[in-house]
Length: 408
Image 1 (cartoon, rainbow, N blue to C red):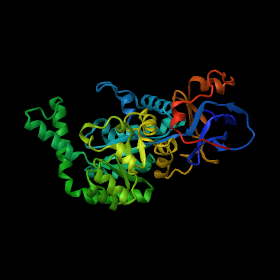
Image 2: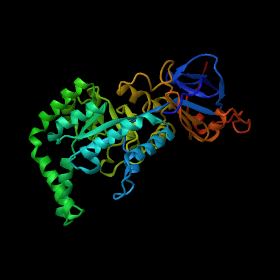
Image 3: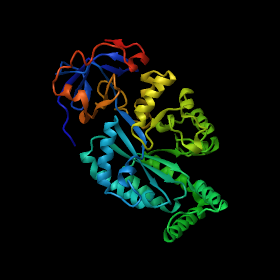
Image 4: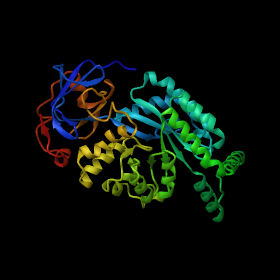
């Protein structure tokens, strides 16, 4: 792990604090946000915002297996994911790993391999990488193994997911149209059918299985929810056993039911601009505007979180503080992380520095440690004075859409 930054004060920037953009300074010391006459760094022309808290990220799979037949060492994939997260302003990242009957990179064997690698990698991590398991509901026979893994690897988040019905429907449709239901070699196809049949055979045991898991997770302090709820009834059934988080619901009814019950709704940031084809009728933007969304997650693409924020500001009239809370303060609250999500004195120094004109992230600080730096911000931290011509006072796109800045 890198060293803590020396005590410093960022001056001249616009700071997001107490729900408003303010022209004030912010100081960092011993990994925390503090106060005091510390050495100053002039960040005139920049925005300083709380670090992003990402509740569901699967970008690591792209670094792990960029091609189906090319799988790399998990430690290498974690290092690449870590740097990608930092470069995109993510300071706390939950890596979403499957625990599925599908096997392969989504199966329990690989899940345990990844969790073991993450435990080893954390000592050198730039960001706060954590594990989130996406557990298939029909994995009845792995209950003891799952609970042991959650306990051993200190998994703090888990969501239940049922892909069995969709898989069976997909196979039926392919057969009806004369297609090969499984486009894999015969050996792999036989193994896949066997896993599928075994999962089907445990269907009647699923409700009791989930209740037992929920009770165990409550005892362990695990925060859990569900992924891909089809309707309000499905969401209600999960809520009844304590699975409160509603992640990536597949219908407006499911999202509305979660909101009515006070359960947090987590939506996919990429879906703000690129909705998934079969679920495109569910408008993420509409749910956000209706105040049905509590947090946005990167899903499969880290840059989408920043992109979604500016889309909400520029195209849908949302204030920057309100839009940013969907990727920082609210996710931190959902995961009961009181030490991050806002730039409040005494909290972890997790912050993102954006160039106000280009809107590019030029620095990310995690727990008072430098995780990423580029561009003009790097020169500022090295002690160079900003050139007057580079930051002349003129309206920027971001300034035009921001509320009036408070000056303290």
